[in-house]
Image 1 (cartoon, rainbow, N blue to C red):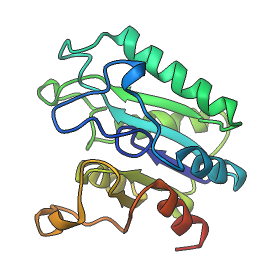
Image 2: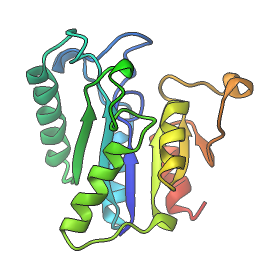
Image 3: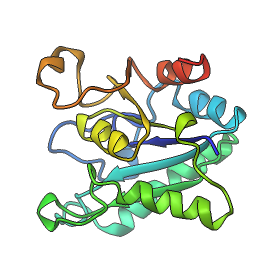
Image 4: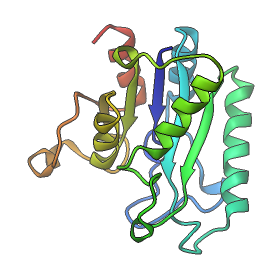
Length: 186
């Protein structure tokens, strides 16, 4: 099974800024070409999972119910475009909680892989990718054995390359260009 793991903020929706969070549905804005890009992946047989750190919940910045509402509305809007998301996994812990699901740890990916196995499917690492907008995302993908694509539509910028602790396999301007790379055979 070909799988795409996506971070949320900065990849699917507008990055809220450093130390800020998407705290309501009115603050959630899909980035340009995201829906068509996800549709292209679905049409080529990719399962899509969203894996995202959302520590604003544990920090008391917004409640779990708001995160659930944002997710419900996001999935409904994607469904309206016939886009299927296989699963959404969030880590709502803080760094200091030292959980196994907070990226760069791979707990969220492990949950998605377990779901696939429960459905009798197996992840094909050579045809699976992690697309994120931070070096933390790249570290997560590499630790999980995935190909990684860093997009510059969110937090990270190309000018910071000399500060990166790990290098992505590929970089792209945004999700649309990352999908171009994947579907073009890289």
